[in-house]
Amino acid sequence: MARTAGSHSDITGPRIQEAALKLFARHGFAAVSMRQIAGEVGLQAGALYNYTPDKQSLLFDLMRDHLNDLLAARAAQPMPDDPMARLEGFARFHIRFHTDRPDEVFIAYMELRNLTPENFEAVTGLRGKYEDELEDILRQGVDAGVFAVPDTKIATLAVIAMLNGVNTWYRPGGRLSLEAVETIYWDMVRKAVTA
Amino acid sequence: MARTAGSHSDITGPRIQEAALKLFARHGFAAVSMRQIAGEVGLQAGALYNYTPDKQSLLFDLMRDHLNDLLAARAAQPMPDDPMARLEGFARFHIRFHTDRPDEVFIAYMELRNLTPENFEAVTGLRGKYEDELEDILRQGVDAGVFAVPDTKIATLAVIAMLNGVNTWYRPGGRLSLEAVETIYWDMVRKAVTA
DNA sequence: GTTTTTTCTGAACGCACGTTCAGATACTGT
DNA sequence: ACAGTATCTGAACGTGCGTTCAGAAAAAAC
Image 1 (spheres, each protein chain N blue to C red):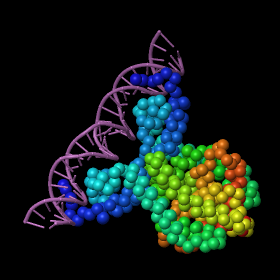
Image 2 (image 1 turned 120 degrees about the horizontal axis):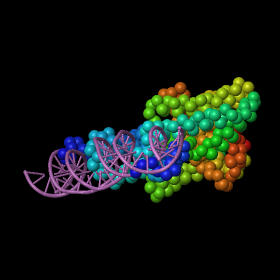
Image 3 (image 1 turned 90 degrees about the vertical axis):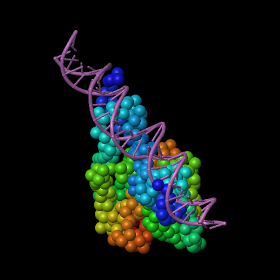
Image 4 (image 1 turned 60 degrees about the vertical axis):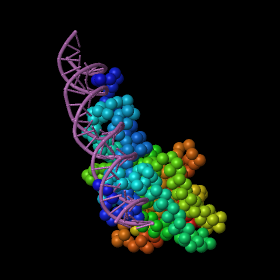
């Protein structure tokens, strides 16, 4: 009934995040209790409050970290001048990044309604930044005459919706390699927006 | 403390369904209580159990009815022989039907994990029937040489994901008419799958 | 070896949950 | 007018919720 042998915040903290991520993705934020999360890590519920002020922050931190990772990873990608090459880079990057983090992606899309208004603003703001990158590419391509879409904003949302769809069925080790999936989707995206 | 004036199951039953639909869509199944649903209809929680055996059935019935409506509405659509015309009909029908029922659609996609295994099977089975219709169209078009997709199953999922995306942003009375939205998306779908 | 800091337990708080049911009132059919 | 049925209330059941906190043990600092 006190500090346990081998306990360290550097270890417990991340383990709590992982447990919350896994359980939120599997059962949904509202259906998961603090006691379940604690149990997954081998703690009593009260110990969680050494690491988070409340349950809501646990969710928000997962989303914010995920979107910051997304933006950072994207910023580290090469950026060709050619719109077609840029779009291909975006499509392939998006599929790779998202299929690699199915739980984070799932939560970031499904649990928005469980955020407080200000946390909601923060998360959708970060996502907006990412979507703006794609819209810039499309606009650049339209200006260059290589893409033809009547509305770049709608085309942006349509392309992202299509690419996000991969996460609903793709599993590593399945019939198709990730490289093959990338190519199939890139092909459809390219045709959909090309002049 | 008894039957109230003007109470009738023909009226109360549908009102309970509507209240559950609205609240589940807004806050999520797990976050909505039977007392909230009852309150929305002007009842005490116990009265709901004249209409549903439990909370889970309330959710399942909403999903099943929605998908049955979808299949029935689709079956009532004209079915041209030409694959291109069939695909256009499917795309436009899908957008019209789904934008007309945003709450039902939202629930049918987001609350699958709150279904018991057998209810889950029933719902995904109905959805599979609908998706098979699209895959049949694509396969027919590929055989006729008018479509070119390396994998009809993946193309089916990609097209549906893209079309479903409309529901994330479209609102009646917005900048674009539904007809215009249909045309924009149909254009992207057509280009994405055409040979 | 002693003190200080970190980490956790276990119990407790008030509250809300899904569900059941006896009893009361409104409606319906005769 | 009366009997039978449909509909709802209000209270209750046990359970689990998010969160707080005093105190105890382990680790770290000195």
